[in-house]
Image 1 (cartoon, rainbow, N blue to C red):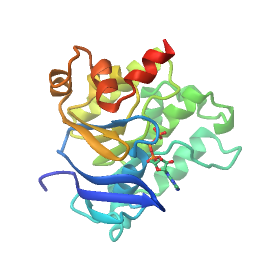
Image 2: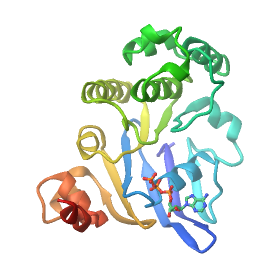
Image 3: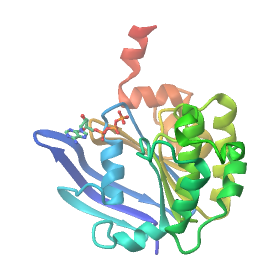
Length: 244
Ligand SMILES: Nc1ncnc2c1ncn2[C@@H]1O[C@H](COP(=O)(O)OP(=O)(O)OP(=O)(O)O)[C@@H](O)[C@H]1O
């Protein structure tokens, strides 16, 4: 297997709206790939096509050399997914939810250890409903890691987390990356992209406007900071200036 994820000329429309157009990307083993873009740029649509929860109109997707549409069961065993809005039984406890999740996999990770690493071990007996937004977000990352996956897909990784928690999450992910985990993430935070990502793809209205490393993104723009370069590529720049 050369690349963990290989997307070729992916296109997906909703009626007349072209959400993703002719997108190609490759994610190497043990690397962190960031899919970036403004709200509505097509990130979630791309992620869903990669995971097989949406069917592309054109193009091909392979993940771990498998088809997300035809090999769902094998993929489910080896791919971790952080869901943004997951629906759980209202009063299920954190520990119960982790237990149920672990029971679905052959070689699950030690979830108590993960809860510890993510700073929510004291919430084992709390119901998911009682968690703060940031604690829930951390729990969703833990749930994505319980399968002991080869690749993990993290949608809006640290949205809702406080500064300390974000840094803790980055540190854990870097450790997991160093131990061979491949990570595909979407994020709106350029500080985190700079710390974590080896390769980035910036989408604008479903089309790739930049593909390469963070330093190439900066180098090929008129700016010196990733955030400025990102806004320049994704054209959020003007809006921000108006807002100031
Ligand atoms: N089920 C759907 N039906 C119709 N249009 C949709 C559907 N899902 C997404 N879209 C549209 O497709 C475009 C891309 O949406 P998508 O959710 O992929 O963007 P995104 O980059 O993930 O945005 P965000 O950062 O806000 O999560 C948007 O214009 C959105 O309104």
